[in-house]
Length: 85
Image (tube, one colour):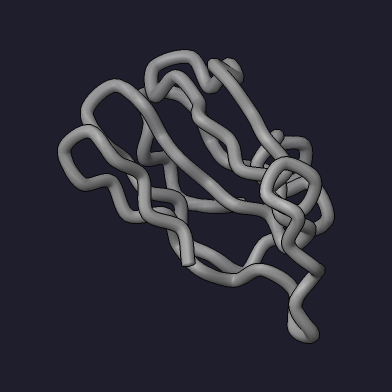
């Protein structure tokens, strides 16, 4: 289990951002949490409830190939942009 960083929510094994496993650190930006799974699933979650606000698979959406060591970058929230490398 991950530490409780979002109110009463804990990021356990059924947390949506862990689909396929996880190598990155979740990013908290105000009332939302961004996380990227090893398989390229990018999630935006409500920080208070943990509910998925939106999700996208960067492999399918942007045509990326799955990297040799999977996706492992932590999303970076910059004003009106979300940077995932």
